[in-house]
Image (tube, rainbow, N blue to C red; front, side):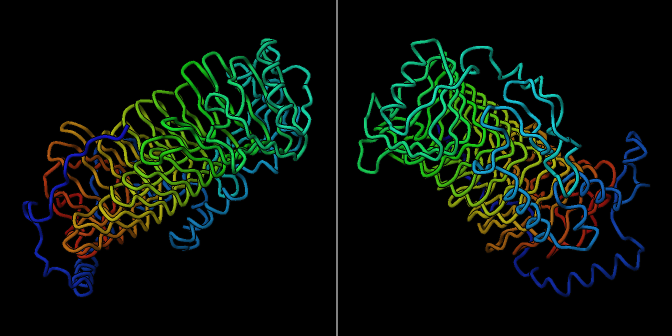
Length: 549
């Protein structure tokens, strides 16, 4: 359900707005650099004695930069070599293109057991296999590490001793055979099906808005590279429906061309309350809903528990949640790709309403929303984004080119780059408490008349946005009269906490180019913060002990 937004302040109403004549960036920047050099100031710092020595001012800006780079996928080596942000992003993107969500290169065998000798394939489907080579997930060559271990926790969480882990029943390459096999598995209290390798099961029958029988038992389907598709000339129906008590596992399978009936959600799959869906090495591609102005979840609509890994969600479309709509459910996705999805309203990739959403070690690229949240829109509940890359997403008429949130948000060790919006918050629009840690936010653009090329913050009075060990650079707010190329604050009663953060080389049409805090929010600095080389100026409404000019 989309939320009602308060209108954003117009540039003319901001107290203390800088005059439009302060746009001669070249001379102003050179003068500032000369003053900084003459004063012997390489960085501007603010320190609190209560912090550990490793985070104190004596560590210097270089320590902050190194710490952030070491924690973000695929960036440390590029930074040491002097590579620009675009090169960092390219390397991150290449990593996920090689490692995430390819059902043709399964991470587990057809028996559900991990294949041997592959470092990233350590989690056994039934919890009995040994983990592969893990690691801390920090190195450039394996930013998605840390998947190792003995797999036992995974087995306890999602494995079952029921019939879905027993001998597989082969299913002939015939859609009627597949329907009959699912019906029989339900009647027998669960089961495991093995599809004909690389077969395409083309569904033509509409059974209550579904192409396949509703799953109400524990069930596993080994796709073996098969495809389940709705026939192009068939009635409108989704592919899977996981009802209350249903627990469906899909492996090595493609689901495509699902299209819901009128006023139904979840073009590829619907997960009802008390239902569970687990995907491993699956592709949901070109699924949609009957009415992309009203119905949600182009690929998956979740009201239960959905767990996804090694999966691709691409080219799906809906009103909210082009790929996924999580409505009061629990949704987790890891080592996967969410690319090229479209939402007519909010959440080009994922929309979450009052649910819990966790995104880790995944690529969200080229997603599009007609309003807020090009990649992710969160309204209520809690959203976490860890070790992920969000690039080239678009929010076409709202804010938050990559992420828009009106609920608690945690971002860690992630890259957010090259996202755009014609309004504010090229990377992030934060309307609630948020924490961004050990991340890179660069080369995002907000072309509206307000600003916030990187981050636009408008939480409630008394709320805090915390940014730690993060680089915010190269973001732009080029709209006429726009400011705050790096960060733009809206709420006077909010708090912005900066810890060991670097805000550099951001630009805006109007001053300042770094942080616009004209409204007078509380800005606290901890550790060592570097705010330099922003154009036309660095800050407005920020204490000079934190920001020089």
